[in-house]
Image (cartoon, rainbow, N blue to C red):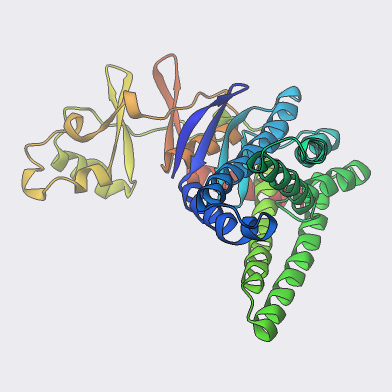
Length: 371
């Protein structure tokens, strides 16, 4: 649901489809509401042009904010897969969470500090050059300064998934030395803050019938759901820390040959085992993966004619992992690919398979042990 637009510091930058919607909406809002009040008597071209550039400045500011997070993460040897700009801001997707409270604190604080610096920079340019610069440039500088300060303040709300919530977790984690308990503490604080937003939103909507109440409600619900998601993510990450794919994979794997007909596959593999997919092996080498979904795409009348090699997913599009890979990385791969199983390959040979059930079992066992 996003479009890659480039790379910065080795990180893919993507635009979510909602970005285009909010860009148009924000440009319209600035052109018809904000700018005519602050800069009356200008032409429609001025309002729409400055509105569009100002909207673009917001997303540039968000991008710089997220790049700051990513640069600090990379200094702590944490891989950043991508930065995605959404309609409410941006997200830096990291392969793992911070390993220490110091890393958590510095990574989280980098974004708001960068936004404050940008806000001061733009406001200074606006104040010092306001008399000499064209009105269009002045308007853009003023809005860019304002929006960066707002961005920093909003992100410092001490609730997940805001930067302020992660700063708070870094502080609590540093004192308690327990990432799970500190995450649980900040999650509870996040819920309390979300209830405040929801309450204010309901009051504003009931008594004033104002759109701002709807936004407060939306933010409250967003914080509530995101806080629980952050807690779940931390529990899963901690449960899988130090676990490799080889420790959790199933080694005794039933495979099928590419020359089998779909009817043979159905009769001797899919139906008896109730499994939904099988690695396809030829002369000891993994050549693909076939699932019941691949079979269902073919009319049953043709199952005696069609063969596995004609419908299977070949190696080109197949996501695999190695036995030494971290379980967390494998889980991310599985989620990104939208599949329920990953072949485990070493030296071109199939050595096992890891499924969602394997992850669920290990996570449950380790969380139960820790509790």
